[in-house]
Image 1 (cartoon, helix red, strand yellow):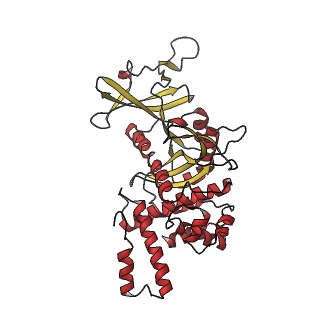
Image 2 (spheres, one colour):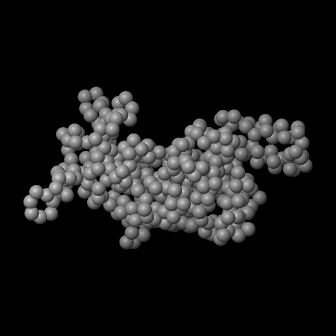
Image 3 (cartoon, helix red, strand yellow):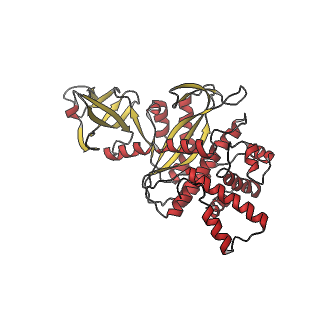
Length: 397
């Protein structure tokens, strides 16, 4: 994997040798450190000084380009992939941190004071695994709402998405707003998302005009239970959930969309969920598959927060926060790709990031000890010890 990272960095025209060496060391230390990923603590697990971390945290690095090149090298082109976008809350105290504000914290179920990051990832449908592409901090800007910032994030990364042959970007119900949808459609991407269960939708009128004047475009508001027979039934998702679909007009999104209704019975009451896509020709079951794949981004946030220091930046500068966040998610990508290469499979498999981090720490420590003792890694006895104790303390061998 180190060779692949060097190759990708070398292909980036704006990266000079000093920054390349720093990025290689940064990715290495983010998968071996113990405790918190502060600049001081990271320096304890590398040969770099704390000041070096602080200095390079102010230098711009194009993580979107790096991850795009990395993903295109590792994942086969023929694999079906989609993009997903979501925001995550980061706990942060203090009064001088840039971007500090009130953001929704999903784990607490309420708005709290801290930081927020917007992240776009790529999900490989074959392996059902997400890989981070780019992340940026949400900073309140006058004249620009947060939804505008999310939409601009997609617009800025759209060229990278197109190079990866991405046509769809999945988002949860919060992003189902006309400002976000219209901006994304301008980038030649389609959205797969979710609507309220009582969404204001209208039937399209397909009848020809019988009189004078323009024919009406819509044929009344949709009442989901009463108008169930007007939907096209497309089978069942499983033994309990039935699927219905139709191309309709959304009043809130101000355009025609393909909507898929998931309907199930719980005791004596029927429940439903409404998914949609701006691609009116998208198959219903494929639409559901794309939306389900969106949830893989949640595992990115979980694993990066628990293992690669996503929330540990102590700098007050937004440049340092963006560096820490993107480096943390990119280091997680590298662990996932290394696991994929070791297993030599593109299918879905179980991966323990905690085990990989323990393994990387063991290898890092043994290399330092062997180097101090002057032991040659090519020696058969030393090599056996290295292989045996690489998995020492790991959750899964």
